[in-house]
Image (cartoon, rainbow, N blue to C red; front, side):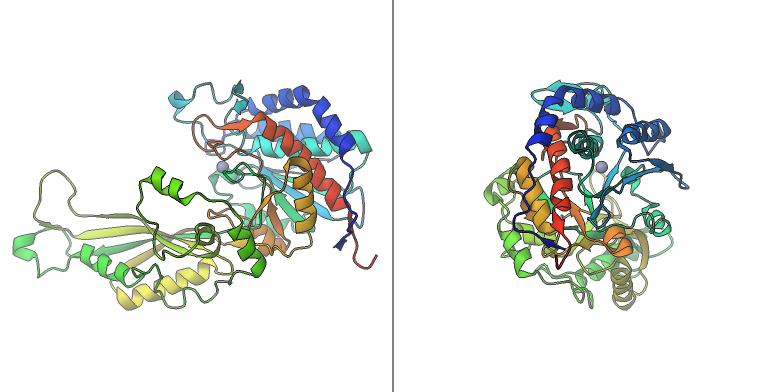
Length: 462
Ligand SMILES: [Zn+2]
């Protein structure tokens, strides 16, 4: 498919319809937000899946609530234009637990407006954002009577507990999820407030290293220099894994790191960042090594090796002349395209066998990275749609954090894009989660514009 140079759909009537229904849309969002759906506790899950399916049904999306061995997914679709692109709109109807409740200024499941923001658990993450996309479908249907492209709405109920069943679900329902691209509206936009289109996420691999000495703690005078000290064992091992130039020195660690393309480098350099302000706020004199690397290049283009915690021995008041008998470190590695968690774990384990043969390595959670090329045929229509609804977006090659986008790019094999609508200070997962009201309306407009711009793509050769 190509983007016709004249493909700028007229959204005037749809945007006017959205503006005319602001209060109604807000009221309906509030009804949705009042419904708790805490996946960690199973609270309100079934009712919320029913509720959102009930919102989708009158739009002809024929929603189905699909059970899994955990919480169900909701999948609805409309295929109005065979031959036009089919887009999956992915979101999640579950929310984080609201604790600690005493830190909320208004009850988490009683949406409240203060200073132009809606406060409620899940308003940004993610009910407000996917509800806006669904209202974008509704507004388009109200004005045009049909959708300009084909749509599948896929809402998960376990995102906030790590999407444990998504890979299996995607594999099992591959045929029903046949599509050309997937769009997720979740997370905050860039902190400058400008709209954002992101193309990927880093992956993550967590593991623990455990060292043991004697079978119990010993007197450092009687046994120091005789029994090995597991804390030193770990320090020596860790010292072989990363140097003070910021380079990870595990054999083959960077072998599969994809270099930035010229377009990605250009996009990263265009992202605004106020380094002096960041340093001031964090009370940092310098960033981590290597000093010359750009802020967003660090987050998008490079893997990291972080020691999350180092535990062992005595840490109480005063001193204790003890020789500890065990120590452990918890670590994570953020992965970039095209590293995989399996590959990097095997390399770390081989390194540990070589440099710390008595150290035990225990694998914990992992998620592969994901990246869609900025050169994708869908980039231009998505940039056009976001620009029409909220102004020119920033392009982010990959987020520093991790989301299970790889299930779409690597299992379904389709490009995945992020079009977040929430404000940078949305406080997702925290007390007083919020969404600026105008961003909710911009999200509805963006949702409608995305359908229009994708529908304006023409098959190649025509
Ligand atoms: Zn979340």
